[in-house]
Length: 291
Ligand SMILES: NC(=O)c1ccc[n+]([C@@H]2O[C@H](COP(=O)([O-])OP(=O)(O)OC[C@H]3O[C@@H](n4cnc5c(N)ncnc54)[C@H](O)[C@@H]3O)[C@@H](O)[C@H]2O)c1
Image (cartoon, rainbow, N blue to C red):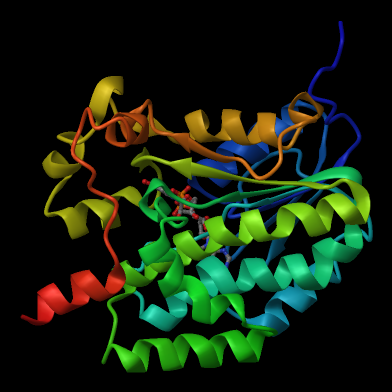
């Protein structure tokens, strides 16, 4: 039998490995023979991981301590951890969902991901339309950002300009930023060592986060009403399967892809077969809320 995935014996890092999509992927990668370094703010309950590292991705020093426990050579990195923003401030949400991933990429992955390796992030279908000019313009201040402190300063000033921004809108902004970041890093990582960079954009998924999204939308029934052609919510393992593909040898010519794992919901909106619910700007929403 041919091992088409090619994970056997490879060093793989998964953030958010203790729950939901990250846990489902970690289980799959262990099964496929990878040496998995599972990173989360709590212990990852997956038998067979090489190391479970407890770290807070909201703190630079904690990330640095975690990477001291991770090998110098990484074959595949999966940045999956995130927070919904429903019970978090704007700054906390931007920090965990975006600043930490940018910091990890520019500080550690640039040095450690092996030739031909891969970097995959979980963003969100909520972060779609990041490339449309009006939305892209709202992302611009962050594009010029440098190190951790600089990005925190930019995020703080960004929020101050709007008065204040709820964490749930920070979530959308953070996912749009991460989608743009994936596109920005395609050429530098191709030039560096032919490292591929991709994103998975999940639709609403059964995971630790679902109850917070349901709370935001006004109940589980509201979430269930928006399942689209699939007729069911996604399961964490539905996302893990696509992540396992993107990080593997099977995806050898796939970089800069933003894969909506939504059973066609975005495609229907792009084709005008369903109303476009995603082409809004932060400024537009906040000024409507203020009116
Ligand atoms: N569930 C959904 O409906 C949905 C939809 C779109 C995108 N997503 C994204 O999917 C990704 C995975 O989330 P999930 O749905 O599996 O939820 P989850 O809550 O089950 O898993 C998230 C994991 O991230 C970890 N984490 C959160 N903050 C952390 C921090 N500061 N440091 C270290 N670890 C931290 C949590 O401990 C948890 O194990 C997230 O990035 C999320 O934004 C989820």
